[in-house]
Structures are given as C-alpha cells and as structure tokens.
Image 1 (cartoon, rainbow, N blue to C red):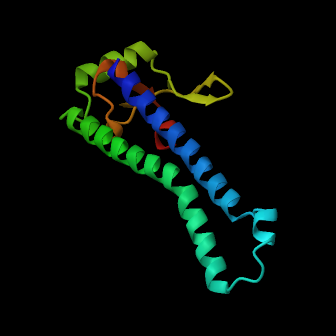
Image 2 (cartoon, rainbow, N blue to C red; image 1 turned 120 degrees about the vertical axis):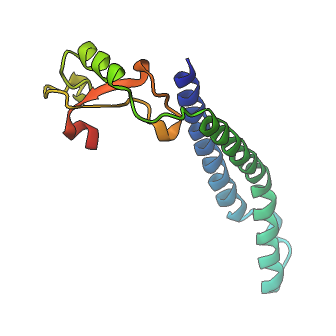
Length: 153
C-alpha cells in the first residue's frame, strides 16, 4: 500500500507541475499579444512606457501560476523528505528474501521486454521494483528477479 501511495503522489505532482507550466506559458504568450483597439487610441508612446506596460502585463499574468508553482515545489520537497525518512534502513535483500523471490519468479527474469512480453532470459539478480533511492521498501513485495541486461536498463 505504501508503494502505491509513493508512486501515485509522484505521478500527481508531475501532472500538476505539467499543468501549471502549460498555464504559465499560455499566460505569458497571451499577455504579450497586442490588445487591439485599446492600444491604438493612445497615440505615440515612448519605448520605456511600452516596455513597462509589457512587463506589468506579464507579471500580472504570471503571478497566479507562479504562486501555485511555488506551493507545488514546497509540497514536493515535504513529500520527498517524508518518503526518504521512511525509507528502509537496509538496502540489500537478505539471502532468504532473494531465494524466495527467485523461486517465485521460477528463475526467469520478471522484467518486461516490450509490448507487454516478459523477458525470456534467466534471472541473475534481485532488485527493487520501485527503487530504494525513491522510497521503495526492501521487502518481498518490492522484489523483482532480473537478468543483468534488464537490471542495467
């Protein structure tokens, strides 16, 4: 259950970041577009006034998504720190866990070879399915038997 929470919270943060970045880009582009008739009636303006107007419109458009981006960054830092603190102290699988995991896999690599097919090579190594460095636990549910080629990939 813990692995699902870690995985889906990461996916949700990536999706939220993507949405805010798109919102930020669209806001900047729309703020730089000419306003039409409102600017035409002013007459000649100095370069400084035009530049100041552009900067003001960009800052006004960027403020809401920028604030949300800052909040998302703080949330991501807090979640990552919490997951790192919860990380198992032991990184390596025990011999018993490795033996049970290899028996469960039938001595065959459990990684995907592409198009939903299982890799046909024999398993040589035991690894974390969800990486230990990203908060994956060192238990049998997170054990995956892998050949050397799939483990490197």
